[in-house]
Amino acid sequence: MEILVAGAIGLLTACGIYLVLRGSSFPVVLGLMLLSYSVNLFIVAMGRLTVGRPPIVAAGAATYADPLPQALVLTAIVIGLATTVFTIVLALAVSVPPRDEAADRVARPQGDEPSLR
Amino acid sequence: MTHAAIASVLVPSACAALMLFIGDRRLRAQRVLGLVSCVTLVLIAIAAVLWTSSGAIEVYRLGDWPAPFGIVLVLDRLAALMLALTAVVGGAALAAVLTADPGLDTRGRHFHPLFQLQLMGLNGAFVTGDLFNLFVFFEVLLVASYCLLVHGRGAVRLRFGFHYVVVNLTASALFLIGIALLYAATGTLNFADLAVRVPRAAPADASLVHVAALVLLVVFAVKAAVFPLCLWLPGAYAAAAPPVAALFAIMTKVGVYAILRLHGSVFGLDAGAVGTWLLAGAIVTAGFGALGALAAPTLASMTGYLTLASIGTLLIAVGAGSSAGSSAALYYLAHSTLVTAALFLLAERIAAQRASDGFLPSRPVAQPAELGTLFVIGAASVAGLPPLSGFIGKLTVLQSTATTPGRPWLWSMLLATGLLTTIGLARGGSALFWKTTDAAAPATRAGFVALAPTVTLLAFGAALALFAAPVQRFTDATAEQIAERELYAASVLHATDEPPVRPMPSEPRP
Image (cartoon, rainbow over all chains, first blue to last red; front, side, top):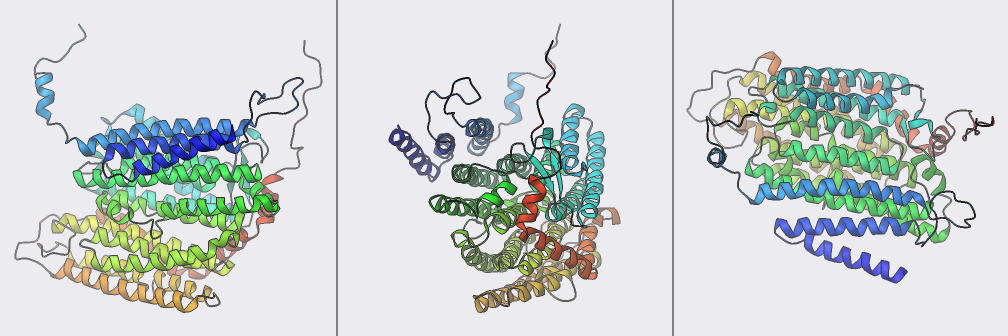
């Protein structure tokens, strides 16, 4: 299992770094996502790899899984998701020129305000 | 136990939430709330400095969990100093936004909540006593800074904003790797607990700790903009709106703070030859910043490069590894933050009257006497000319590195930086005020109120020079406190005499 996890982390990181170093914004965003996945796996692995062990006190358990890295990785996932969304929006704003206001006006002509009634 | 540490985080976050409820349409209410928050933060910072000046280390246990198990906020001299700087620079930046016409906050949405969240992230990073919590606050301040950087839009701002975000997200990934390595080697992320366990790490784990120390050094070097990880800074700072750039003057110092806190106190600069790397990076950063300042086309861009030069200078003092070095670095940190922020704000006022802060011929400014005087004070201070704070700062940096092995390199770079900065600022100043076209000066003049933020920041800089002895006593004491890792660990881990684990209630439940 160690080799499998280590190989997966290595492969994800390599792909992530390759994509981050690309010139255009979309591969860079993909690369950042891959990097954050590999980092999350790495954090879990640093709490030692265990299978089928309880993380909190349980009757009759001899060994436990370390719960702290799991809590850390949960936080990292949430933060990573938020920043990824922000990066995508920013990348879109950079690559797509801002829409002219006229486009909005075509979609919703003036004097025709939507009303609740 | 005082509540200053938690209040410095809660006040801006509560104000940000309130501002979102108030909404952008009631801008006046948002502005008042922003000012209230900034004034409160200044008062909290004053209280924090007074409390910690006796040498006390205030530990605030979140949820009343004892230290290695729960997250603690720690208020020591270093944290108090950084809180005070943040409060002053944040207040001045907000005042600059409110006194400009039209204000930056009218050119986009949610400026004030983002500004408060930025202050919350900064304060949180300075008071936290836990490495993962530091990561979280880093993300808070970075997300807010991403939005503030691109505030007001514009293609240039967006492009540099994207670079800035990508560089910082990559650094965040590295930060998590460093944290995970450290946890794997020591089993803790609390600064105080780390300070106890890192020196006692088993030989097999010691190399892992060194790797973690170096990975974290790379992360903080990105935040502090150390060469070659500094290329995102000059463009981004020049592209940002000037008040935002002034607030960002404190952001690079977060990286320096983290290096002082972790590498200065927890790991020690010997771990993995951190000190040597730091010195090498600092020397090149100082030179790069000074050369960039010579070549910069606008005052804002020049100030961005001067930020780099000042980072290089103060990291040379940190890399010296002595208590005197840390003290000199802290003095220089306070000086450079205040003065570069003032120069960013001044660049905006000059640009408003001159149509640009570029060094090409343009129409003359309406108030050459007032703006020129402010520029000369700021420039002389940055360049390190006597009798201002930059001179005293650079002198103490030179003194503190007198016994460092690489002294010829350090001293020649420090002095060359001063010379190059002087030349660059002289060229910039003469271009700004004397290279004019025949066009008439604008009729709009900046009143005292509009110049007040810049004047305040420069006055704080002058006060640093005037009260150099008391300030240096404080920074000396701070540097000693940073070096005393056992005392720090003992204060945090045994904050009270209560038993660390409360006994379970013994009476049987009904």
